[in-house]
Image: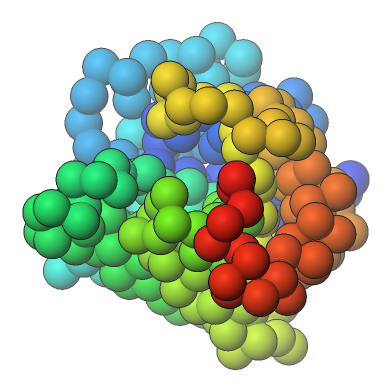
Length: 251
Protein backbone atom coordinates (compact mmCIF):
# COMPACT_ATOMS: atom_id res chain seq x y z
CA UNK A 1 0.00 0.00 0.00
CA UNK A 2 1.03 3.63 -0.43
CA UNK A 3 2.39 5.27 2.69
CA UNK A 4 0.85 8.19 4.57
CA UNK A 5 2.43 10.61 2.09
CA UNK A 6 0.95 8.88 -0.97
CA UNK A 7 4.22 7.33 -2.15
CA UNK A 8 4.14 3.78 -3.55
CA UNK A 9 5.91 1.29 -1.33
CA UNK A 10 6.39 -1.33 -4.03
CA UNK A 11 7.26 -1.01 -7.71
CA UNK A 12 7.34 -3.55 -10.54
CA UNK A 13 9.22 -2.53 -13.68
CA UNK A 14 8.54 -4.50 -16.85
CA UNK A 15 11.68 -3.80 -18.82
CA UNK A 16 14.08 -3.70 -15.90
CA UNK A 17 16.99 -2.10 -17.76
CA UNK A 18 14.97 0.79 -19.24
CA UNK A 19 16.79 4.05 -18.58
CA UNK A 20 13.49 5.90 -18.19
CA UNK A 21 12.16 3.28 -15.78
CA UNK A 22 15.33 3.30 -13.70
CA UNK A 23 15.31 7.10 -13.52
CA UNK A 24 11.74 6.84 -12.25
CA UNK A 25 12.74 4.17 -9.73
CA UNK A 26 15.53 6.37 -8.37
CA UNK A 27 13.08 9.23 -7.78
CA UNK A 28 10.58 6.95 -6.07
CA UNK A 29 13.18 5.24 -3.90
CA UNK A 30 14.30 8.69 -2.74
CA UNK A 31 10.67 9.23 -1.68
CA UNK A 32 10.21 6.07 0.36
CA UNK A 33 9.56 3.34 -2.22
CA UNK A 34 11.17 0.30 -0.62
CA UNK A 35 10.63 -2.78 -2.81
CA UNK A 36 11.51 -2.74 -6.50
CA UNK A 37 11.08 -5.70 -8.85
CA UNK A 38 13.07 -5.50 -12.08
CA UNK A 39 11.57 -7.82 -14.68
CA UNK A 40 13.61 -8.50 -17.78
CA UNK A 41 15.81 -10.94 -19.60
CA UNK A 42 18.63 -12.15 -17.33
CA UNK A 43 21.75 -10.13 -18.04
CA UNK A 44 24.63 -8.35 -16.30
CA UNK A 45 22.82 -5.06 -17.01
CA UNK A 46 19.73 -6.24 -15.12
CA UNK A 47 21.81 -7.30 -12.12
CA UNK A 48 23.77 -4.04 -12.22
CA UNK A 49 20.52 -2.07 -12.16
CA UNK A 50 19.35 -4.02 -9.11
CA UNK A 51 22.68 -3.46 -7.34
CA UNK A 52 22.43 0.27 -8.02
CA UNK A 53 18.96 0.49 -6.47
CA UNK A 54 20.14 -1.53 -3.47
CA UNK A 55 22.89 1.04 -2.94
CA UNK A 56 20.14 3.67 -2.78
CA UNK A 57 18.37 1.72 -0.04
CA UNK A 58 15.81 -0.31 -1.98
CA UNK A 59 15.06 -3.99 -1.62
CA UNK A 60 15.67 -4.65 -5.32
CA UNK A 61 14.85 -8.03 -6.79
CA UNK A 62 15.12 -9.38 -10.33
CA UNK A 63 12.76 -11.71 -12.16
CA UNK A 64 13.22 -13.37 -15.55
CA UNK A 65 10.69 -11.88 -17.96
CA UNK A 66 10.52 -11.95 -21.76
CA UNK A 67 8.02 -9.78 -23.65
CA UNK A 68 8.21 -12.29 -26.51
CA UNK A 69 7.07 -15.18 -24.32
CA UNK A 70 3.48 -14.14 -23.51
CA UNK A 71 2.55 -17.72 -22.69
CA UNK A 72 4.66 -17.35 -19.52
CA UNK A 73 3.57 -13.87 -18.44
CA UNK A 74 0.78 -15.01 -16.14
CA UNK A 75 3.04 -17.50 -14.38
CA UNK A 76 6.04 -15.18 -14.03
CA UNK A 77 4.17 -12.05 -13.00
CA UNK A 78 1.75 -13.98 -10.82
CA UNK A 79 4.67 -15.08 -8.67
CA UNK A 80 5.69 -11.45 -8.15
CA UNK A 81 2.22 -10.43 -7.00
CA UNK A 82 2.06 -13.51 -4.79
CA UNK A 83 4.95 -12.03 -2.78
CA UNK A 84 2.80 -9.06 -1.75
CA UNK A 85 0.79 -6.16 -3.11
CA UNK A 86 2.34 -4.05 -5.87
CA UNK A 87 1.50 -0.35 -5.68
CA UNK A 88 2.91 0.63 -9.06
CA UNK A 89 3.61 -1.24 -12.29
CA UNK A 90 5.71 0.54 -14.90
CA UNK A 91 5.43 -1.03 -18.36
CA UNK A 92 8.63 0.22 -19.94
CA UNK A 93 9.89 -2.37 -22.40
CA UNK A 94 10.06 -1.77 -26.13
CA UNK A 95 12.31 -1.74 -29.17
CA UNK A 96 12.83 0.92 -31.82
CA UNK A 97 13.76 -1.48 -34.58
CA UNK A 98 15.23 -0.53 -37.95
CA UNK A 99 12.70 0.83 -40.42
CA UNK A 100 14.74 0.00 -43.54
CA UNK A 101 15.33 -3.54 -42.35
CA UNK A 102 11.68 -3.96 -41.45
CA UNK A 103 10.62 -3.06 -44.98
CA UNK A 104 13.06 -5.58 -46.44
CA UNK A 105 12.53 -8.29 -43.82
CA UNK A 106 8.87 -8.42 -42.71
CA UNK A 107 9.73 -10.74 -39.81
CA UNK A 108 11.86 -7.95 -38.35
CA UNK A 109 8.76 -5.73 -38.38
CA UNK A 110 6.76 -8.51 -36.74
CA UNK A 111 9.31 -8.69 -33.92
CA UNK A 112 8.89 -4.97 -33.24
CA UNK A 113 5.10 -5.35 -33.21
CA UNK A 114 5.22 -8.42 -30.98
CA UNK A 115 7.48 -6.72 -28.46
CA UNK A 116 5.91 -3.27 -28.36
CA UNK A 117 2.28 -4.26 -28.75
CA UNK A 118 1.46 -7.96 -28.37
CA UNK A 119 3.83 -8.49 -25.45
CA UNK A 120 2.62 -5.30 -23.79
CA UNK A 121 -1.03 -6.25 -24.22
CA UNK A 122 -0.48 -9.59 -22.53
CA UNK A 123 1.67 -8.25 -19.69
CA UNK A 124 -0.63 -5.28 -19.22
CA UNK A 125 -3.72 -7.45 -18.89
CA UNK A 126 -2.01 -9.83 -16.48
CA UNK A 127 -0.95 -6.95 -14.24
CA UNK A 128 -4.34 -5.26 -14.54
CA UNK A 129 -6.03 -8.43 -13.33
CA UNK A 130 -3.72 -8.62 -10.32
CA UNK A 131 -4.10 -4.93 -9.49
CA UNK A 132 -7.87 -5.17 -9.73
CA UNK A 133 -7.81 -8.14 -7.34
CA UNK A 134 -5.83 -5.97 -4.89
CA UNK A 135 -8.31 -3.14 -5.29
CA UNK A 136 -5.58 -0.53 -5.63
CA UNK A 137 -2.47 0.38 -7.57
CA UNK A 138 -1.31 2.23 -10.67
CA UNK A 139 -0.20 1.02 -14.08
CA UNK A 140 2.05 3.39 -16.01
CA UNK A 141 2.45 2.66 -19.72
CA UNK A 142 5.31 4.24 -21.65
CA UNK A 143 3.82 5.12 -25.02
CA UNK A 144 5.32 7.64 -27.46
CA UNK A 145 4.36 10.65 -29.55
CA UNK A 146 5.36 8.43 -32.47
CA UNK A 147 2.02 6.72 -31.99
CA UNK A 148 0.07 9.92 -32.53
CA UNK A 149 0.73 9.94 -36.27
CA UNK A 150 2.86 7.46 -38.18
CA UNK A 151 5.86 8.98 -39.95
CA UNK A 152 7.51 7.58 -43.07
CA UNK A 153 10.79 7.37 -41.19
CA UNK A 154 9.54 4.95 -38.50
CA UNK A 155 6.00 3.86 -39.24
CA UNK A 156 6.53 0.29 -38.02
CA UNK A 157 7.57 1.53 -34.58
CA UNK A 158 4.96 4.29 -34.64
CA UNK A 159 2.15 1.89 -35.50
CA UNK A 160 3.11 -0.41 -32.64
CA UNK A 161 3.04 2.52 -30.22
CA UNK A 162 -0.29 3.69 -31.64
CA UNK A 163 -1.74 0.29 -30.84
CA UNK A 164 -0.22 0.30 -27.36
CA UNK A 165 -1.54 3.79 -26.66
CA UNK A 166 -5.08 2.87 -27.69
CA UNK A 167 -4.91 -0.32 -25.64
CA UNK A 168 -3.72 1.52 -22.53
CA UNK A 169 -6.46 4.12 -22.80
CA UNK A 170 -9.10 1.42 -23.18
CA UNK A 171 -7.65 -0.50 -20.26
CA UNK A 172 -7.84 2.65 -18.17
CA UNK A 173 -11.53 2.97 -19.02
CA UNK A 174 -12.11 -0.69 -18.18
CA UNK A 175 -10.47 -0.24 -14.76
CA UNK A 176 -12.25 3.00 -13.89
CA UNK A 177 -13.95 2.67 -10.54
CA UNK A 178 -11.94 -0.39 -9.47
CA UNK A 179 -9.34 1.55 -7.49
CA UNK A 180 -6.72 0.98 -10.22
CA UNK A 181 -5.28 3.99 -12.05
CA UNK A 182 -3.76 3.85 -15.56
CA UNK A 183 -1.37 6.56 -16.71
CA UNK A 184 -0.28 6.81 -20.35
CA UNK A 185 3.04 8.61 -20.86
CA UNK A 186 3.83 10.08 -24.28
CA UNK A 187 7.47 11.18 -24.50
CA UNK A 188 9.01 12.62 -27.60
CA UNK A 189 12.66 12.02 -28.43
CA UNK A 190 14.43 10.82 -25.27
CA UNK A 191 18.22 10.72 -25.03
CA UNK A 192 18.87 7.04 -24.24
CA UNK A 193 20.98 4.19 -25.54
CA UNK A 194 18.07 3.25 -27.82
CA UNK A 195 18.24 6.61 -29.62
CA UNK A 196 22.03 6.91 -29.54
CA UNK A 197 23.32 7.76 -33.00
CA UNK A 198 19.99 9.15 -34.22
CA UNK A 199 19.52 12.78 -35.16
CA UNK A 200 18.06 14.53 -32.15
CA UNK A 201 14.54 15.83 -32.63
CA UNK A 202 13.25 19.17 -31.35
CA UNK A 203 11.98 19.21 -27.75
CA UNK A 204 14.23 16.28 -26.84
CA UNK A 205 14.30 15.23 -23.19
CA UNK A 206 16.43 13.20 -20.80
CA UNK A 207 15.15 10.13 -18.91
CA UNK A 208 15.06 12.22 -15.72
CA UNK A 209 12.54 14.61 -17.28
CA UNK A 210 10.27 11.71 -18.17
CA UNK A 211 10.66 10.31 -14.65
CA UNK A 212 9.63 13.65 -13.16
CA UNK A 213 6.57 13.77 -15.43
CA UNK A 214 5.61 10.24 -14.39
CA UNK A 215 5.86 11.15 -10.72
CA UNK A 216 3.78 14.29 -11.24
CA UNK A 217 1.19 12.40 -13.27
CA UNK A 218 0.84 9.79 -10.55
CA UNK A 219 0.44 12.41 -7.87
CA UNK A 220 -2.25 14.21 -9.90
CA UNK A 221 -3.96 10.96 -10.95
CA UNK A 222 -3.60 12.09 -14.56
CA UNK A 223 -4.61 9.80 -17.40
CA UNK A 224 -2.16 11.10 -20.04
CA UNK A 225 1.04 13.12 -19.75
CA UNK A 226 3.24 14.49 -22.55
CA UNK A 227 6.98 14.95 -22.17
CA UNK A 228 7.76 17.74 -22.60
CA UNK A 229 4.31 19.26 -22.15
CA UNK A 230 4.71 21.45 -25.25
CA UNK A 231 4.42 18.34 -27.43
CA UNK A 232 0.71 18.21 -26.72
CA UNK A 233 0.14 21.42 -28.71
CA UNK A 234 2.60 20.41 -31.42
CA UNK A 235 0.90 17.06 -32.02
CA UNK A 236 -2.55 18.65 -31.91
CA UNK A 237 -1.49 20.59 -35.01
CA UNK A 238 0.40 17.78 -36.77
CA UNK A 239 -2.51 15.38 -36.27
CA UNK A 240 -4.65 17.50 -38.59
CA UNK A 241 -2.11 18.32 -41.31
CA UNK A 242 -3.28 16.84 -44.66
CA UNK A 243 -1.40 13.68 -45.63
CA UNK A 244 -0.03 15.19 -48.81
CA UNK A 245 1.55 17.98 -46.80
CA UNK A 246 2.56 15.80 -43.85
CA UNK A 247 4.59 13.37 -45.97
CA UNK A 248 6.72 16.26 -47.17
CA UNK A 249 7.45 17.64 -43.70
CA UNK A 250 10.96 17.02 -42.28
CA UNK A 251 9.63 15.14 -39.25
